[in-house]
Image (cartoon, rainbow, N blue to C red; front, side, top):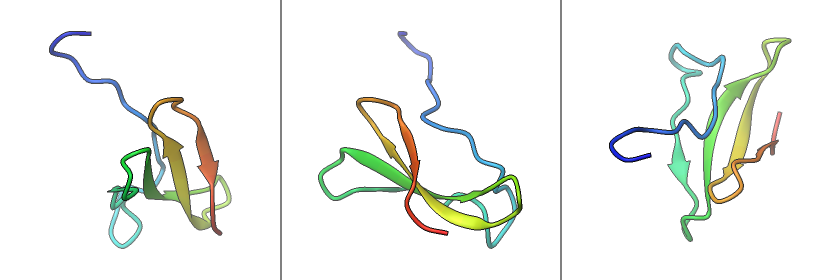
Length: 59
């Protein structure tokens, strides 16, 4: 998709201190960010860049 963007993930975390704070893994293979679960629990979610799969890694 030339000139466009493709979101890796969406989050319910939109306000400080829970807004996403995305960070790339040192090897560039994933992005980790703050996320809010449906129950309002803050967690860290990992998105594998190549595959686009989301995985909650903490709660």
